[in-house]
Image (tube, rainbow, N blue to C red; front, top):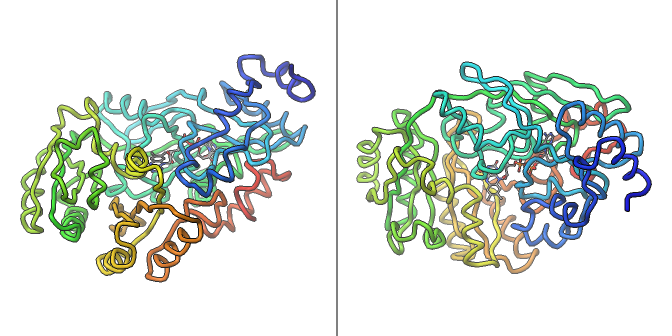
Length: 440
Ligand code: FAD
């Protein structure tokens, strides 16, 4: 039975918008932190005291004012597909589940305005029916929300053409502050950087305007290679060939393709693979690049089958780790930025040092305009000490690691958070938004 603030919150918002049972609280207090054995050990017992599921901006404001009055921590949740425990309440309090703010507000010419809880998969479907499509989206797009992607993700499918979230892929957001009377602010321009990938630590994003692209017809293909080195050089050539419009260029070292059970029968045994999503009519240039780099075009999914079968992007980005975990539960992963110039040398050093303890796959992306080999290496996990030995080796050899085994923004994907800390002090004076996730 609800007592204290829980009872007051129930009276204020109504029973269908406040969940206090243990099962809901456990389920909605978790994300995909368990990909990391380090985070799993530390986060699996964390649970919110209550879940609030608002259905309008007004109800978000009511919940925030209530939490402010009672000094309750508030952790926002979109779909809870983040990997770093970003959506896990470290100190109890309220999880604010925004998945019901799911209205597409406006579809314009090459932009869309949505409420934060709209799922990217549903948005992509809607846009394609109208002759447009998303520019970038994570491989979890069927579940993930627009707000969760902007506040907790980085890039994904499409990033090889359009860059990541920081590259002009967010135009405007509406943010609510955590104050006695929450303010609604509209943010655009450079200040957006203080809200992108901030884990909801300095405001609640309720509405977003993002740029979209004209729709294309996408062919998917796998090009196979005897040597992973050739796969990488092919991937670099295709990534830099602006005549080939593309959404995905993902070279994968063997035995990673052996994890891809649903498409295994289409893949060559023992061969490296490059998973590609390129626009219709690009088979010829792909074949030419494949020949140049000793590869051969294998499995093809025609554009007529797009989204009708499992797609190749379902094996890319962090879905690769997911398929790996199904075969070998002892694995985990890293997030790595290789040098666009020295990546072949860096790969050799890593493979010579670690062999099969580290398996490589890359998702080429245009980071700040530079075509870059980003990677989510799979690591066979033994101990935390060994994991950090591997991380140190990468960094000593010029490979930047965005540590996925921490929930602290400064130590993981964001590094410098100066502007964000200032906004936090202004927007969340009591430090109630997702406490513990950002060191000021
Ligand atoms: P959540 O996990 O619910 O939230 C993410 C963070 O944002 C949390 O800190 C939360 O508090 C905050 N937040 C959520 N909504 C709001 C809001 N409205 N206002 C303020 N803060 C908010 N990520 C990528 O970038 N690219 C990938 O390709 C990718 N692939 C993945 C593959 C797998 C298999 C998995 C498990 C994860 C992957 N991710 C990837 C991570 C994650 O799926 C995405 O970043 C996704 O977009 C998160 O959306 P979500 O709605 O699930 O957010």
